[in-house]
Image (cartoon, rainbow, N blue to C red; front, side, top):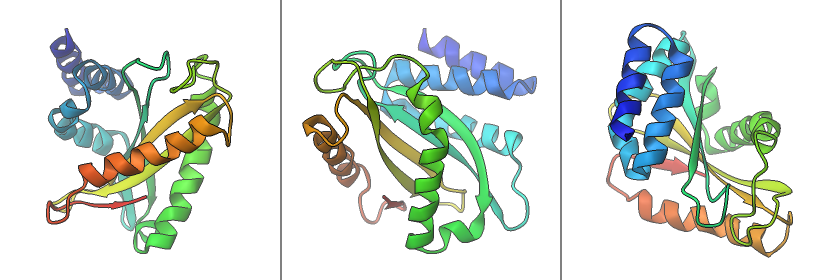
Length: 187
């Protein structure tokens, strides 16, 4: 069934229906799991370039939000992709990149929060906030960066589940980004 969504994403891309294509690509990744992101990456880059062609001095990139355990504590992650364009200067220094990440997360938080009634990733109670952990990935080969935001719905902002959610993606990123593999993460 996941393969059908990938084929639909590819077909919609060919007929310039990029929003539908991105939704089917996100569904494909959700069904196959995070390891399918590598298979989806070439099509995602092509969609990003089609939706927001890079202009001089700017970078086009995918802002990929992975919401962890949003329907129930054991639910698989849900993926939402946005295509953004920003001046290249935002990515020159780590401080500028972190400031841009904060602004980017804030610009999408309300939409993500009210998209549907989320439940706490740890306790299964109704979520009152979202804990974001964005990171910029600079792929090898000169491609523009991808921003992946590991997001966890929490029932109490500042509570135990919020603090645990803050530690989880950092630990996962330590395993995901290995020195010498051609990627650098800024989180």
